[in-house]
Figure 1 (spheres, helix red, strand yellow):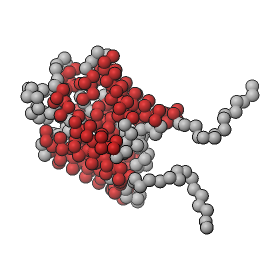
Figure 2 (cartoon, helix red, strand yellow):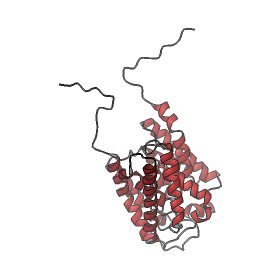
Figure 3 (cartoon, helix red, strand yellow):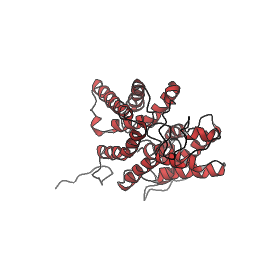
Figure 4 (cartoon, helix red, strand yellow):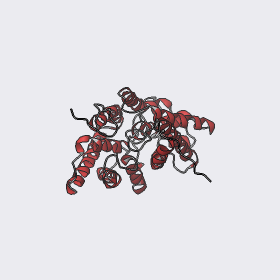
Length: 311
């Protein structure tokens, strides 16, 4: 009988990258259905182009550099859907292809591929597109409202920041202006429940993030419901802040990460020149994840105590 010696971990599970990504895609179906209902079939076209571009860029890059082809793990497809979710429904198709290039080639592949990217690719792509094509990225489509109120000329966060009033029901259901994946809180929460039940993500980061935003909103005298339901908070908290690669792996680290996300988001929204701050909050916190992991890393059981040097 041979004795097999190998390094930890020694316990393996049946989950694979492809199965996890498949669950993420399933969890995003309600948000996609809501976007089609409110914004039209063009959202499907935009999403399809985004996914195809991400998959194509990953395949071509790995093919040219003679690396293993990894498009089968579905991570590029997930990035494509998330990138589309971060774009307005009327965005020209060539623009989302530019975003796909930055997400897959610049943020993911140039840093070593899946598992080595320093930040969430879709988040960085949204920031790049927002800075480079501001007009196109803020060209909103406004569906008919569920409440029967007049259609606004700006997103709920912008309306609220300007002193206007918003309807909670429209924000919860999704009949408001915004990027196609963030408007329906109901659809996003359905996806969140699915991911938690399937144990694909831990609820720690999303709950801590949202709770921090709500508490700080109350402290600063702004409407916590608008801050939670408005903008990309739920989309970012559920689908992007929980990314395995760019989020902490310890429970304490996840709490610190969520609090940091909430603080930065509220500070940008309340005191910055932008009405939204989720993308920048996630990017900034992604950059400090290695330090959070190091600070919250558990001490191995039975590890010797550090010996103090004699003076």
